[in-house]
Image (cartoon, rainbow, N blue to C red; front, side):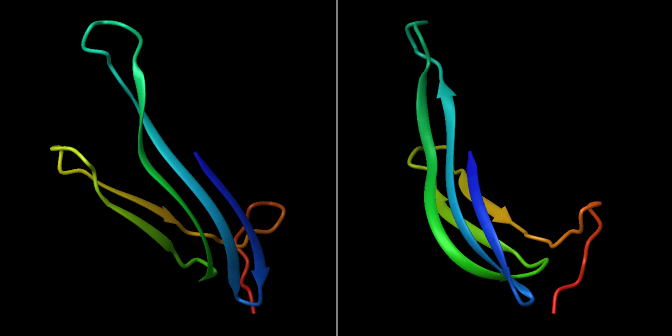
Amino acid sequence: MIDAAGKFVFSSVKLSVGVTATQLVPSPSGGAPTVKTNLTAGCQAVVENKGALVIDAGYANDDTGKVYWIVLSPEALDARGIPIGLK
């Protein structure tokens, strides 16, 4: 789940972001699965229009070798969904 709020400030976007990534883990006994949290993060950042915010949570705490990243790229659009330039 990603919760994000942004405010345009000149040619940039001030972002407030909260991220949680989970997955279901099957029970070895065949019972109900459990939920494993892979990533949880919160931050505020100022990002250029069409720029990117990258959140690197590092490696998983298991033997999979997985790395978890979230990439957010805000872009200013008009009411029709057409990109607009910011100054």
